[in-house]
Amino acid sequence: MEWIKENKILCKKIGIIAGVYLGMKYLVPLVIPFLIAATLVCWLWPFLKWTRRHLHIRPPYVMGGLVLIVVAILGIGIYMAGRELGNLAIYLRTMLEKRGQIEELLYNCCDSIGQLFHVESSDLRIFVTDQLNVFRDQARQNILPGAFGGSWQLLKGAGSWIAAIVVTGISLLLLSADFEEIKEMGKRYSLYEKAVSSIRGMLHAVGGYLRAQFIIMGIVTLLCILGVWISGSTRMPIAVGIGIGLLDALPVFGTGTVFIPWLFICFLQRKYTSALILAVTYGVCMLTREFLEPKLIGNRLGILPIVILMSVYVGVKLYGFGGILLGPLSVLLVRELWKQIDTE
Image (cartoon, rainbow, N blue to C red):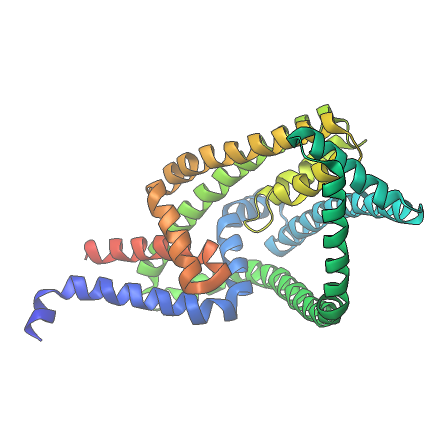
């Protein structure tokens, strides 16, 4: 007990770490749509107040307009991506309908690889044919039966995501309508000022993080547009480049989700120049993000890049996939709460 009294501040900080971990682990997944909505409303509230004061438009209507604009932009992006995927599907179906077309493409690929590495093309053809037969047998026994179960799980997951997005949108409208009343209710509690101070610090840090991500995403998008246009692989380089740039901001997908299969298809079509340009573009985009991300995000958050990397790694270990975001957010929240203790 004496040690606890002498190290009261240290014990509080340890308690904060434990509380943040338990909250992020068990509470945040349950209320994440409302947290996202509250964060966005707090961030946009100065703009919402300005529109109400100068344009006499109530905040819920402004927020509804912003939501519709975001939905429209996402819809256009999904439509363009779907059209490109549809064109790719038509091309693949056309290849499949031509008898022997796939075999010819594979054999041409084997011939090209054999010439490049000075290997007998006939041996490569036999190896590829054997592996295709093995894959076909495995698909019949394992992959196809499991695909239906996986499709059902995918549909359930998509339904959950759609429900969460709808709830977030409705929460945005409701919170923007009652934001000032909620603030007045919060002021009745003694912890309100400390909570607001911590939230402001986090919002400032998260805003800096988002600005840094937008800067990186914008540069990567321009590089993608330029590379795709030079390669001549599509008639819509701007739309495709923007779509790839948006994917680059997502931790799971990234630019490789599009570039790797695309350059492989170009290689099979013997469009070696296009494949090389796409490969170079992919490499430049990766290097650009790896170079800019630690510098910009570290400077914006006021945290060393190595700490950000550690927070992501530890976050994934503790929270699973969501730790990519929850890890850095946990560090930010702990830092802000520690500041409150140090100023007591």
